[in-house]
Amino acid sequence: MTGHRSLAQRAAAVFSCTLLAACSGVLSLAPPDVRAALAPTGVLRVGVYPGSPTSLVRGGNGDEMRGVSVDIGRALAARLGVGAEFVIVERADEVTQTLKAGRADVAVTNASAARAKEIDFVAPPLVGIELGYLVMPGSAVTAVETVDRSGVRVGVSAGSSSQAALGKVFTQAALVPVASLAAATELLKSHQIDAFATNKGILYELADGLPGARVLDGRWGLEHLAIAIPKGREAAMPYLQRFATEMRDSGAVQRAADRAGLRGTAPADAH
View: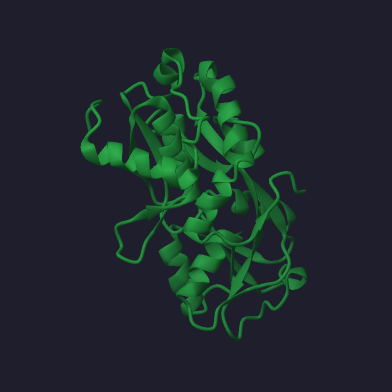
């Protein structure tokens, strides 16, 4: 993709502005130094992964892209006066690595302490989301409080913050790293895992395609989703902090979440 904006890119930017209500007197183009820091290739490369309303899901026709990362990325591209290009990877941890390597310029992802060592997060966070478990009928797991038992197998996305967090607290249950959300679905269907653990936005999305599956009541933790950028782009941070505050306080983040069907959210400052 070149640095010139095609008609399709301009249309996407206009659509994003309309969707997020970011054009009503507050939208202003970012200064040149911010544009150079955030979109050095002439387009804003947004890191996303499929299957999560926090990142990327597709509409009923299969080609309309939705998600908090998608819509916030489009809104930011409009502010910069450039097109948005989506860098699609398999898992959330690959988004982190794509940002770290400079192959993407921005994403919305879980602002964990481990990831903050590799990429920079923008304060304030955009939204909170509960962490939970998805189970199939007949699973040995029936409540959040009884997961950590001998013989219980809990699937987690390989390299994810869920794998890291549960690995520190489980004393009996076994963690089973999986390569993708599609692989997690197959393991649940074949009862090779008793539960799958991640944020509830993903869990509800998976449950929609698994007859009888249910997301357990309660939560084992919280994620705080924030805008993330590669390290070394500090010149853009003050602008991004104002942008993040506006997107959250104006209701733009909530509209993006609603459009993507994101469930399981919590206040951004929840603990």
